[in-house]
Image (tube, rainbow, N blue to C red):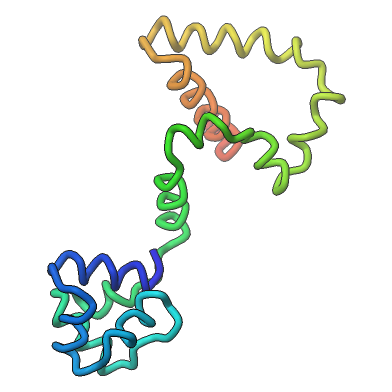
Length: 151
């Protein structure tokens, strides 16, 4: 979450309008709006006043999200309908081109048949849904790839 979003969230959590926050801080409503839209940023004194007004630490207010937090926020922002409509292989192929070409190079049935059996075993043995079994298998593959020495 960016500074502007954190400011909006903190202000709304306190129940203040932009006008009310501006009055408490001695700035214009437009200034508060610009901070929230990231058209400008508060100076250090204003940031300290904001943290006091909103009841958060200065660190919480100014903290940059970690890559993990950014990824989690991006994932959370995708609703179920969009999830179903997106061709994820095509989307990821922009970063990993092999995803758009491997089908012409790899004998898919050689790998698909045993993978289908593994998915079925996960569904039966653990009562996973199709989606859950797929996610578990993906995670197992990622673990083996990241830590091959353990297997």
